[in-house]
Image (cartoon, rainbow, N blue to C red; front, side, top):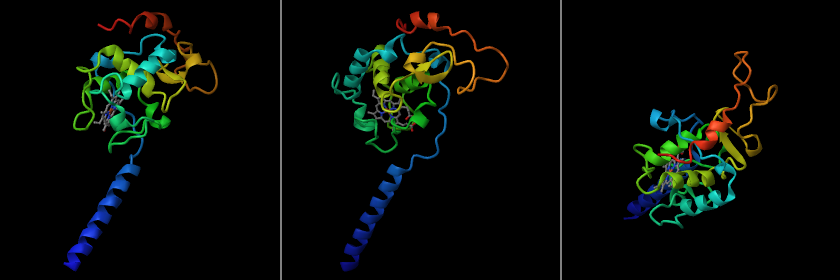
Amino acid sequence: MKINGLMALAMIGCVGVLLTGCEAEEGPIQPPPPAPPEYADKHMPAGWWADEKIIAEGKEIFEGVKNIDVNCSSCHGKDGKPVKAGARDFRKTERMKLYPDSVWFWRISEGVPNTKMKAWKSKLPEEDRWKAMAYERTFGLKGMGYDVARQEWVPLAELGKPAPAAGATPVAGDGKAPAAAPAKDGAKKGKGGK
Ligand code: HEC
C-alpha cells in the first residue's frame, strides 16, 4: 500500500513535468507551408488592416462573443497566449511574420490536419474569417499589415508603398528596380470574395 501511494505520487510528479515541458517547448521557428492555389491569391480586403471597427468585430468573433460555437480564444487564449497545448503563440512576432495572410486564411478556413485546429469555413463566412485575422494579428503584429506586393509584413503607414529603395529591407538582389506596387488593383479585390 505504501509503495503504491509513493508510486502514485511519483507518477503525478512525472505528468506534471511532462506537461510543463510541453508548454514551454514550441520547437524551432519554421516557415509554414505555402497556401494551396485556391487560397494563394486571397488577401485581406483593402483597408481592413487599419480599420478599428473591423478589428473590434474580429475580437468578438475570436472570443466567441458573436457566436459561442466559434471561440478561437478557448485554445489560442484571449491575449494570444495559447491555453491548449499545440496552439502556437500568436504573440511571437518572429514566427507569425513568416505567415502570409493567405496562409492564415487557408488555415482558418480548412484547419490543420491531425491537430485540434479544425476547418472554420462552414461556421464563419469569408468576411468573418478576415475580421478574426485582423484581430488575431494584433497579438504579435500590432500596427502591421501584410503587403501583398512586397510579400512581407510592414507598418500600416507603408502598406501598398514600394519597398524603400536602399537600406534596411533586403530586396531580391536581381538588380531590378522594385516592382511598382500594384496597390490599386489590390484595392478592389478581396472585398467581394466569391
Ligand atoms: C480546439 C482548439 C482550437 C480552436 C477553437 C481554434 N484553434 Fe487555431 N489552432 C489550434 C492549434 C492546436 C493550432 C496549431 C496547429 C498546428 O500544429 O499547426 C492552430 C493553428 C491556427 C492557425 C495557424 C497558425 C499556426 O499556429 O500554425 C491560425 C491562424 C489559427 N489557428 C486561427 C484560429 C482562429 C481564427 C480560430 C477561431 C475561428 C481558431 N484558430 C480556433 C487550435 C485551435
